[in-house]
Length: 175
Image (cartoon, one colour):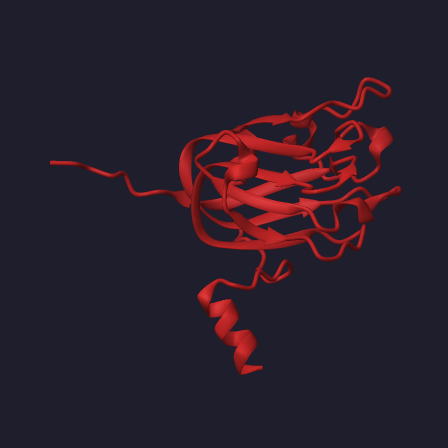
């Protein structure tokens, strides 16, 4: 147990389900961001990246509130927050009508590169229960971009809501 505690403290072990709920009245930073993704699965004119930050976490794809890529190698989704924030918690709503297991192995990344696949990993999704939102602790990681990637695998990436909580980073002043 001491080894696990040391690994977590040093940041060598990411635990996906570790965050408390955001405080009441916390602002979901994603709502004001610009979302994009590697491709769009055009089925019934749905699946656009912005649908994962529309404030509706309904997990039934046909109801029109989930993003969805085509089946491809290393699919990704990201949101540009326009400013750099210290990210504390990211909450992801998975698809509920099917296929939520596709998120297993997905990496949640935070950083300042628009190429989300090069940003540091905040956490990895290790399990999915469709009716339960996935909380990922980022412990103040700084970034303008928050993304979800499925590395080293050909698959679809579907997100029914991504909520991002944190605070604005301190401005860097040079004299």
